[in-house]
Image (cartoon, rainbow, N blue to C red):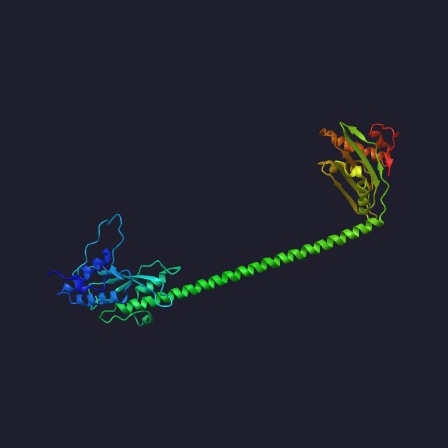
Length: 383
């Protein structure tokens, strides 16, 4: 016979297809006189709709997502159907997280409530800011799996053959609210730990920077002290006599050799300082130098400086080694004339050095003969 829906489902909002489908289901339950559990289920569902009343329908018939294999709606459920009745309850968590929405899938088997317990599943993938864990999904599924021996009585609802959806729903709400609170606490702890780690890292960086700055200050102090000591030693060390050769001019470049006898690094520095005190020499393009000497204790010192003329210093040092001139320093000054000389410049540098060594009387007769019988009429300048 026809059923008047307006009397049976005043608490339901049938503004959506799912809610309207639920109204038809409830109507079928109330009309199913031959189903012993139908009226109890209908009464319980109407009570749930009233208890969890929201601006939107709180209880609706579950509709599985449409896929390419199921483009049409599922068959209509009836009280005589062997499939479970599936409903979606839309509610929120319990305080203090009542602002977090919660969606539960309620599955009522054909034998519910007298012969079989219901099943509750969590539909939400996120609760609050956290993704729902597999443990929570499983805990919700076990709400009606009462097993005192397994020690889960505190997290389950005892099914005794009567309607029990409300108790299970409330337990799930409390369970999920507790889970959200624990995860929010964990997020706060993690954030505090990250903040503390960041502050610790910042402190460590500050300490490293402070130590580096302190190291720089110590190094600067050491350098200043060494420089002061060096300056003090320089003041006490007279500059050895310096002999300079006559200029060699080739394609507008000018080469002049300078020679001095040295017996210490202080005298090497004194020679360089004395030469560079001459503005003309200081403004030269290159001041190539090399020295070698042996101290009274038998320690040999030798070094060279290109001063921008690549490989010229080592060639000058090689010349001193070949000539075997002891305790001597040679500096060759070049003023570049604007025309590249190529490899010829090395010959001219060595020639200026040999001229200075000859003028200073530091080359043997055999060395002078190798030089090509150069006449000594044009003696070099002595400083």
